Amino acid sequence: MHKTAVGYAVGKMLQVMGLMLLIPLLIAFYDLPEGYTNSYISHPEIMGLISAVLFSLIAGTLLVLGFRGGRDLQGIKEGYAIVTFGWIGLGFVSSIPFTLYFMDSGSVPLIEAFTNGFFEAMSGLTTTGASILSDVESLPRSLLFLRALTHWLGGMGIITLALVIFPAMGVVGYQMFRGEVPGPTTEKLFPRLAQTASILWGVYL
Image (cartoon, rainbow, N blue to C red; front, side, top):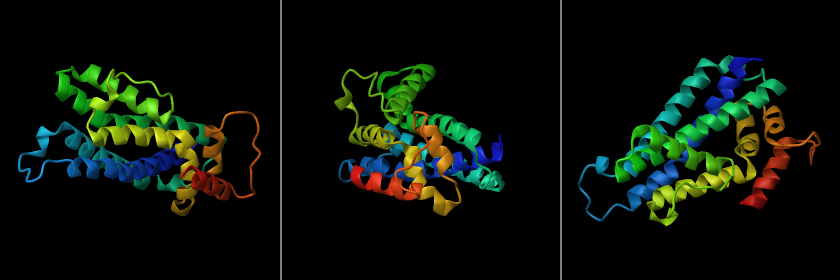
């Protein structure tokens, strides 16, 4: 298995996720009271989203630059590894805002807050739908949007989304598709997999 191919593709996934996290961050800023002058540190959801965006973009860029030699080395083994490590990486990044919010809102220890945050993020990315929250609506709107965003991305499969975005970035999509779609068949709806994914996402949108 070519580890450089896995590192390069996971880096691209983190870069895309970092950009998408800007949306809930903008919502968090929009929800600030008019004339707000206090430090953003007093809003854990804002600090959490800023931390997640920076970590995702920086880590993703470092992986892409460090493993750019693996952009054309993807096979079946690499596809499964990309799906596995990609889901773990995106789950970790998405858990950062939840973790900081849980720590601030209830004086929860770091380990417990991270466990709850990671569970909440992975629940969305894997479309499990479970939650550790008894009152989901108590979250700030930015985190509610983040939670919905992870479910939305996981609903169609973020790897399928990557089939549309990544070809222009130099990442081969088919092997990632093999790791994402269950079942023994490898049939495609159309000869070009990117075209298939584009149509599916058009319907989904």
